[in-house]
Length: 237
Image (cartoon, rainbow, N blue to C red; front, top):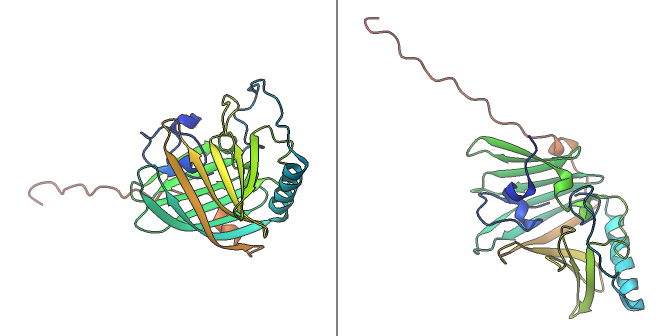
């Protein structure tokens, strides 16, 4: 059964504005920042970008399109200040892996249009449609931020470029902010605000664009085999 985005685990909160009541967190798309397939976007004017803003969006689009593979360390800070870390792997098109460091028991893998969230401590494995997440900005081959109706603004100041966007078509305000270094463009972090106003930030470190990545890292994870319970021997034997 397909699960609604509202019930995606906490690991996906780093890319989706979810309710804080979910247990795990999550990080990851569809073709754009837009929401569910077939949903009409609300009527709104296309942002009147200045020539400088158009040039900035073109540069960021070119930077994102130049990335075919990526490896980076990440630090994730949740709405309550909880911190997790790990390693991120991206292989275009459409593959991503969030490998969390202990004591976290999470592993997130996206491949072939599905997102797999494994909790090795609970021995659970949940799957979701990749189209329920806004990972397209990172996983698509061709990105044009000027034409992306999810993008709602761009700002360049203090050596950083920020791009504000919305993660679904039923939002009139931005709820995700991506931060790039400037003038040497490099993705540094993204922050997502959930429906309760809490922010989850994922900061990237030691980016390796063009890294050689083992395809086996994107094999869908499996639950560990359940061991059969020992049946007690009958009395008298």
